[in-house]
Image (tube, rainbow, N blue to C red; front, side, top):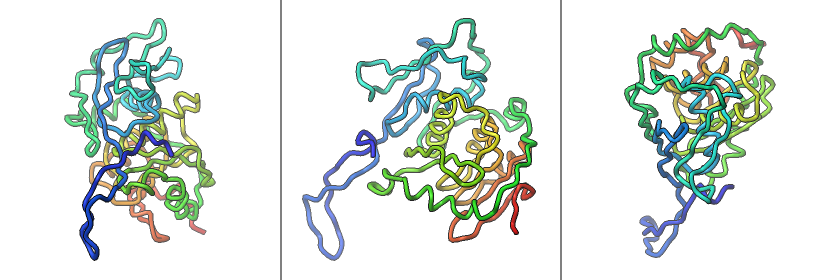
Length: 269
């Protein structure tokens, strides 16, 4: 486990045996400012760790970059890898489209980006995902346990979300944790961007917690056809999945799940 993701705090335990002077481990939450060529574009509250992946994933899922080669470099603006400012240098000849920065890019750890443009505007950036790769339903049943086995920060703190990227056979490619579920997704997608693994058309995205519109949108921008959430989807998430032709699964736990859109990719026998 990355020790920079957690910290110890003093607490007073109340219960069968009340005592002071105890310690607890909590997930760290700190702001990260992402800059492009010294221009600040977003502040997000995140758990430190994998910040270059977070920056790359955010730029990709917001449509600010569309090719891996659009990025020349990503680095912290300090001598330490735990700095709270990351600068992205765009490749020579790549121009930043100011219209992509018209939204108020302030993101909290809980709700994602506030004041996001309408679904119609996002839909203009995303082509429907028409690949119909068969997926064994038993693979979906296995995802929560496979994620849970490697959620080290959650094991210690109980206070982090996780996003896991899987192959269609259920093999785990990458898992990232963060206090913000949307940050965890950006870190996973950023891992793929920096690893030159885009697009992700043969993958499944598993997420702890609910499936929000923003999570569906980020998956669509990465061309991920299947999204499986441990908890419920929102109404707008379902509408987005319909527009993007994604298979959207909720309540994926206890050997069951609900399919909210496009069960056609699933093989149940």
